[in-house]
Image 1 (cartoon, rainbow, N blue to C red):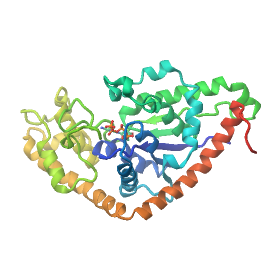
Image 2 (spheres, rainbow, N blue to C red):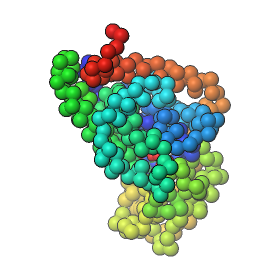
Image 3 (tube, protein in one colour):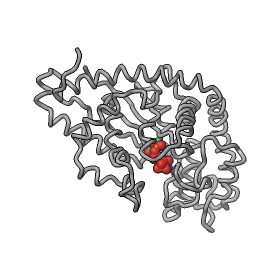
Image 4 (cartoon, rainbow, N blue to C red):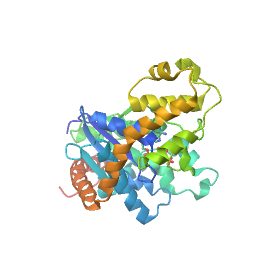
Amino acid sequence: MAAIERVFSGVQPTGNLHLGNYLGAIVNFVKLQNTHNCIYCVVDLHAITVWQDPVELTRNIREVTAAFIASGIDPKKHIVFNQSQVAEHAELAWVLNCVARLGWLNRMTQFKEKAGKDRENASVGLYAYPNLMAADILVYRATHVPVGEDQKQHLELARDIAQKFNNDFADSIRAHGLEEKFFPQPEPLITGPATRVMSLRDGAKKMSKSDPSDYSRINLSDEADAIAQKVRKAKTDPEPLPSEEKGLEARPEADNLVGIYAALSGRSKADVLRDFGGGQFSSFKSALVDLSVDKLGPIGAEMKRLTQDPGYVDAVLVDGADRARAIAAETMHAVKDIVGFIRKK
Ligand code: AQP
């Protein structure tokens, strides 16, 4: 069972899929299809670590799937599915719960941010979330994981868990004739046009699905009017745009908008500033509206078309899950042998 170069990544179906998810993750998912075997997952088990209305959750699973396909992911050549259809994710997560250490999870900043002051009331699932994420990746023995900057720490934890499993069970891995590095070290791919897109209302906060203000983000499902309104209302500062990138330092809102323009147009920030430097935000914002509508409009329209055909979307997920399960089951059989469980052979 040789490890091959395989990409795995996931997006939570928690509603309000936004420009940050698109530029930080989905754009890279699309590119990697040319060079790798890719598995893209709608991580519904992760979503329920905070309360989800069941009807909304079903709708959101279909919406993320539609966003994948509308953005250019090919579910026939690669694998697209929702996590809960492949039981091996949860099964491996339990084994990894017993490998990961409490001290490691206590350091996870995302749990601290999401649990906030009401930590005692957070779900156990939210705390164990990074172990499930490690299982998602390792159950496919994936070698590359494209994510936004905010997921870096979880990826490092997945690497630590993989290494500890390989070390703890080294004798058993050898005894079963398996590769010494049974779980490969997954490489984070934090690359691409915008690894951290910030809120349109506050340049110090990342653009996020759970921000109570819809004006903080551009949703992939937004119509042209909504995109225009949000960009026009986006927070800026009173200075004109600088002519050089250095001038964006300490100006987080300007930096973010220029970064979004650069990412959407496939240019560098320096290049964008050559066109807009010295000008007022109003004309830059008009150009950003046109560009955003031009790039995101067709994706939003295709998402709408696809979500009106839930039968098609669900069939894509079932087919993807069947193919994912075949890979995951092979890993899980080996894990059971390594750990010492008895199974039907
Ligand atoms: N602002 C962002 N900039 C760049 N990349 C981002 N990602 C998320 N926000 C940004 C990346 O998108 C992928 C999917 O994210 P997710 O849905 O699994 O979870 P998340 O990081 O929790 O997304 P949100 O929007 O930030 O949700 P909430 O509000 O619940 O915290 C990941 O690769 C992520 O890095």
